[in-house]
Length: 69
Image (cartoon, rainbow, N blue to C red; front, side, top):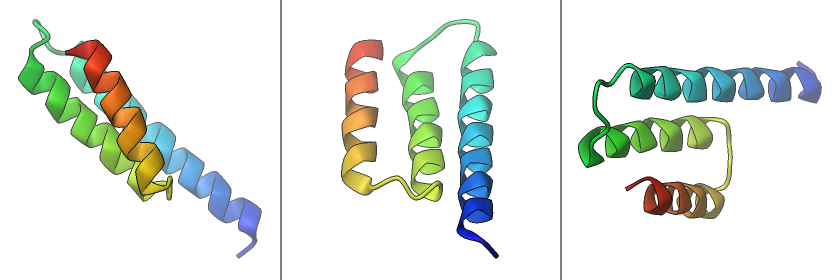
């Protein structure tokens, strides 16, 4: 399998994971700290499954969480 195919597959998985987290968050009647934390966990998982480096994931999740909560 070529490298481009693997990258495209990882990008597709990342897109799917982020869309899933976003759709769950949009479905909430009220945004609470708890449901934001749950969705950030989903986003973290999607980023890690897409092979984004752990330090980058941690900084991203922390930055978004700090702004959202």
